[in-house]
Length: 195
Image (cartoon, rainbow, N blue to C red; front, side):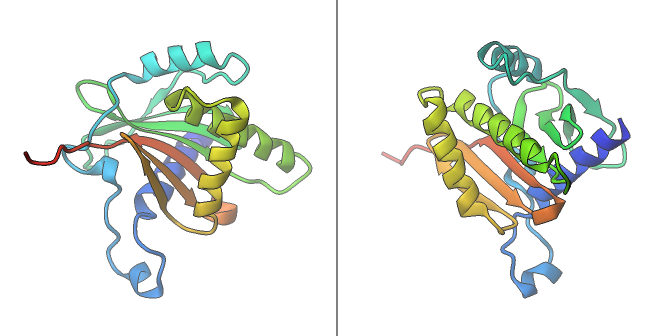
């Protein structure tokens, strides 16, 4: 459980601290807050249990185990953080709205560990990231989903934070090289133009 807690904190740190542009001056300046941490940030209209049930039904070969809440008593955030361990190097995590339990962000984080298993672990990470993307963009075939993921990861390669908005979704990539790669899906608020 200690590794899970560390990986969860890393995945949230990758996304929330990576929001700023990676320039020498911005590294020392205060980094802006990730969108899902802001007051009034939107949620998906489902709880983590509802997501997991539907996701597992659609992806029986890539299951997500139960998400467990992570102790965040020292944090001032009004979010509940939860994580599901997939393997020693792969985790899914989420930030949930307190009270409703609705999802503000869903993340898959891969922690690359050099060695003979690294290529297989990377393939597993890409499979889970593709499955998460396809869950929210259900019209994509497996090949189309992988192609879309590859495009998003390429745009975010070597960048601490890269976001692409599509309709009511934000796809986020946080690439910290050998410290980890996080792919996230978040809802965005849609605004209508004034009449």
